[in-house]
Image (cartoon, rainbow, N blue to C red; front, side):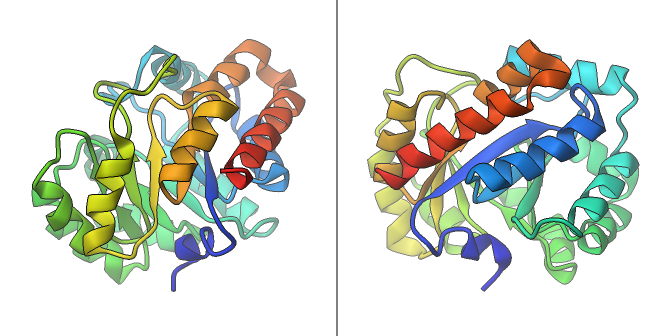
Length: 258
């Protein structure tokens, strides 16, 4: 059992996302530790990139701010290495193919293993093209996390059978961002995935309120929240820590009550 699986052992998981380097890596490091203390069972760390195609405006803007502040992939590796001395909360990177191959895929994955990272989410990597990177990730003990979307249909079974870590169920078409309501039949997607795999299935994209979190967690094994946290960071900057702590506590309570 990988560390990512253990995040789901004690019931439904709350998964939090933060963009590395926004407003600074020092704040990101403090944020991750705070979110873990507040109840986040797994934390996604976004590697800032100039063309994050799956992201809405909130996370796009965070990427721009982080890059302008001088955040680099090497600095993020160093941060994770430091954090591993303070917390064992499962950590995954959310990144894109371009930064990985620009950095050098083998070197990137070796550094993931070396700093104690547990998994990778790559939104622009089609499932059918995952093998080359997937095998290298497996060799470095990094779970390559698969995504299924409302449009996956017959591909859900194929993706679920080979999934590692957890399955990221995309609740809404389009890019990330807060939504007033989620109309996708998430329960049906999760049920299909569960026919073919016992890997946990967590739902993300568009979740921002405790009510949505409770609803999505009730249909799956956990809920993923990103844009709402990144928006708090944008709003409060260096003073964001207590606001994010309170928000994560509310969302974790919602997951517990699912």
